Image (cartoon, helix red, strand yellow):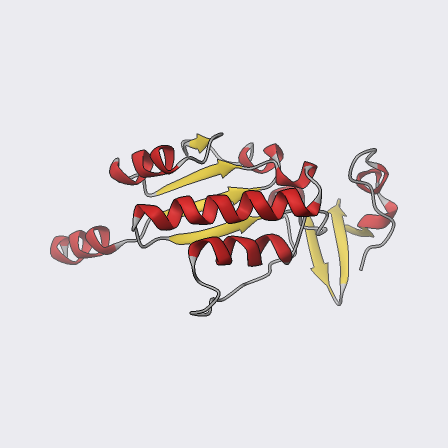
Length: 165
């Protein structure tokens, strides 16, 4: 059994999570969080065999063209490492960020656009009890499902919204 465990460990691809807002990294512990995305910084984590690490982009606070440029740059820097890895682009469960263009810009930077890639969209924030059901995004508190557009989250001064769809 140890042989199989060793083989699995030896063949695991590192996971790089790009997070568009600092609140996401607050839900994890024991995981490195980079606040720079130079090739050297990324390469250092990969060389250390870090199985998973975050890159805090704070791109949700940027306008779309700037977020795209940033995602492209990060993609290029990851590609330059030559490391085969899994990428997660973590955004807001209510899609207040820059989806899908940020994912597309990241893929362009990685050189994946011509090869094809898979995007899995999970419109949920499990730690915050926010889930999507039948095209409506809800906050669940005390077994009550409230459309997020009717919650205080929707009144956020910077990233507010009216719709729960």
